[in-house]
Length: 556
Image 1 (cartoon, rainbow, N blue to C red):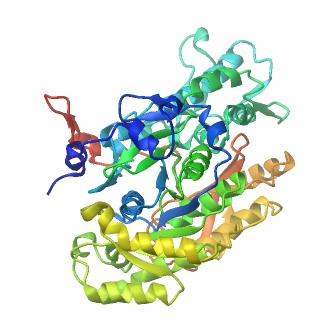
Image 2 (cartoon, rainbow, N blue to C red):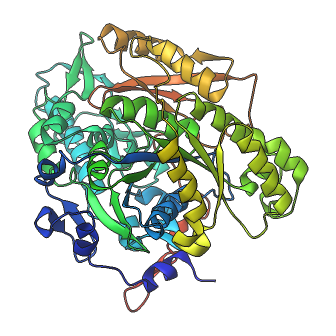
Image 3 (cartoon, rainbow, N blue to C red):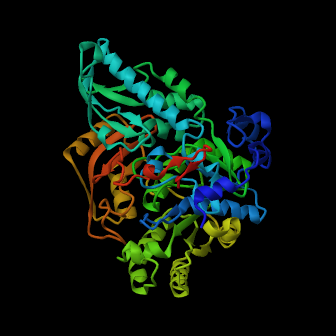
């Protein structure tokens, strides 16, 4: 059986200018990164902004399991299937982080015959967007420390510095560090921290900004610290905005590549959904809606994280109205949630399936709260029995959902035709009554508790003393109207990753709260979630290599 990277490397790519031409995008509006990648020019939006908008389809999933659900694979396969049916469709997806590529999760290009290409370039460096974000993040950190070293005219309290350095790699040793050691000229000694670049507020800002001017305004509002009077100190106060924007001027331009079947794919931005807001850029999505009749996008991890943030943060801020949701699961995922060990998942087990399907049930119920019609799709495996599939189909349809099997990993677009037809049926015949989960005027605690109770199924919420203090401060600063971005583990609906299925009788524990004033949301950190992940015992990096001809091997 061919590996993903072998399939990708054997595919003859189309010139990206030809892919763009199918969306009526001219060569003059592309900035080429070689023959198969390009960015859109700043001028393109003015040319397309008056075009009619297409329909927006969100792809989300159940809580991830060790067996893998294949959400991006389904997204890509659905885009390819729309091409098979002669529909004008475009993908609007996230860029991968180097952290998972070399860690445990792998790349984010899809899999099998439903992949984005060039796969290796997408997963490794791509067009440099993440490097620009990391550089802007660390420029601000450098200017902050330099300001303190040079006399501290803003009276920054070094015990109240909240801006952290960033790197796009899983490196647990950088979570808690000390900087400024050495001679007096080496800076002020203080405790510092790193986040992975995809958790940086700069990433969130890039993904939520409409244009360069909007980006600069948002950068200026970033709170880096508080002074001795407890007042916020911003990036604008440090006079860092212009130089940060200079580093980001190309990164804010969306990127275009293609699928194995040459469906256009706009890939831009990539905040994690467990520790950030989990969606690709507003700019990419809005441009995609002007380019095609159907736009397929995705949000990170399960619907309790990615979809919730897509609806309550991205759609709220950008004024987007999704027309349909595709909820991805597998037979294996349900049996895993029913208590079956990973090695035994291929075996038929109706009892475990019926026990574990409650995880899917809760995600269906959650998505229905937003008023958007749902298609449940299963990434089909050869080990799935007809009895298992029939049970799930009846279960979903009895709850008002469309249902489809997908075999896009094995068959590409042809394997997604059943799913595509179900999506088209919704787009043509069902109305979306989209609404957000909570109003702006709720207090921050009300927002946190609404998400925890309605989406996670918690009985209530507890707060650390530090979280209580932070919430009070944020509301006193007049930012209580902002939406909440919950940082929670992805493996469970609860804040305990070991609680599978549909947990009940638990409370969500908020240990830290901070405001991303530039991005325009408040982050609430639950349980033991880390904004800097670590590497596993056997990192994926151990299997990656370059052969004598310069071809990358072992990347998945």
